Length: 188
Image (tube, rainbow, N blue to C red; front, side, top):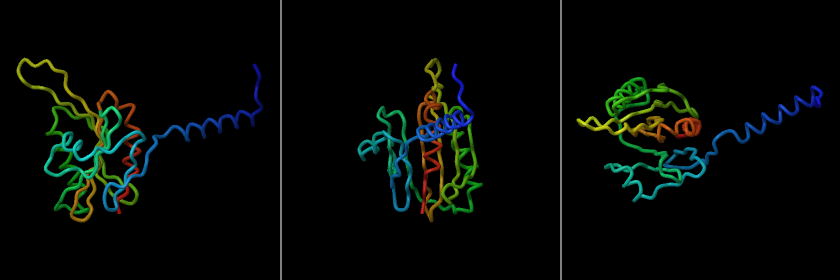
């Protein structure tokens, strides 16, 4: 076995660190989704057309943008709606949205819940795994489980909602991407 002098081993270690850093993180494309709002969209994701948004997200108020991966199982959406809250109400919003999420699903496991600053803007951040069980008598269907990361921000009289979701069994694969894209959000 050949041994490298100390400087050779150090150079090899530095090269390995540089290569891992260069290729290790998720590839995101900075994309404008509204006036003064940009987000990093994962490589391979495409914007859903209005018809696709209407089918996948039926609601009176259409999201500003929805991006999906090639399989259609993983989504990133950005929505905007009027609010009477101000940017001083984030602690209250954290409690309200956490309770709302807990009421929406059969079971919720929170992975993180906080108020954080991203690119000089405060956000309420909730990261969780949700389960929806069919509670009909005699049903033996497996609960539907999803990994979700949601960030909320107030911009004037509007609430901005950034949501990433995927099947819970793909959480390990997608969580680093979700965390990176939530850190890429800019709101001016």
